[in-house]
Image (cartoon, rainbow over all chains, first blue to last red; front, side, top):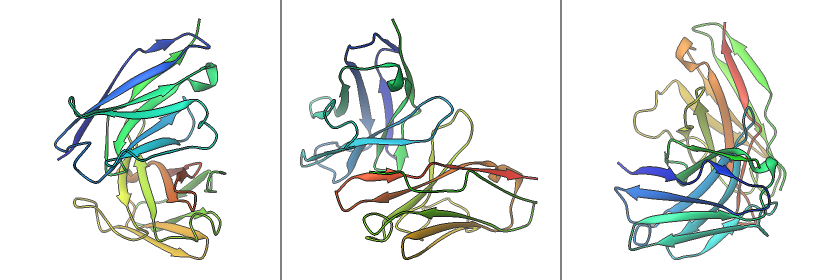
Length: 114
Length: 110
């Protein structure tokens, strides 16, 4: 079974860059043909797809976030990461990493506040 | 891209069947047979219940089924149980090679 675990700061200041890492076990982010995905959920609201990176390195992002988002892979650590720049309070959410939709991390709350 | 449209809430009594709709466009739900459904209990990560319109992952009860007609997909839960009370989200591939979620539906078991 594939397991995923998010890690990163729980508090980010406005205008700064949010950075999260997803550590994967039970699969290879570079060799297994899956869409390694980031999804977020603002408190009390619905799910929002952020984007993915495929094993080939191809990426796709939510058009509403595309100018601020970068998803990348660290094959040596079997991790993939999310960077979201110029954050505001509207980016406060639980951030999930997932193997497409099949396996999910437990989620990590990131609050944007000064 | 706009979120897929789901009813905000549905309810049913134990043993009954309910259906949750998910309406998109010809650029997402109507374009491919790649609609998924997720169940989310409070404070928990979503769980995949249906993928590719009508396929159940291993371990998911056969009380859960999916279908699609045109730009609208549906999730049906038969033999409603108290443990089914949760939020449900649909998701679809899009012709832009992205994914989009529905706004979510709160299921209440009366």
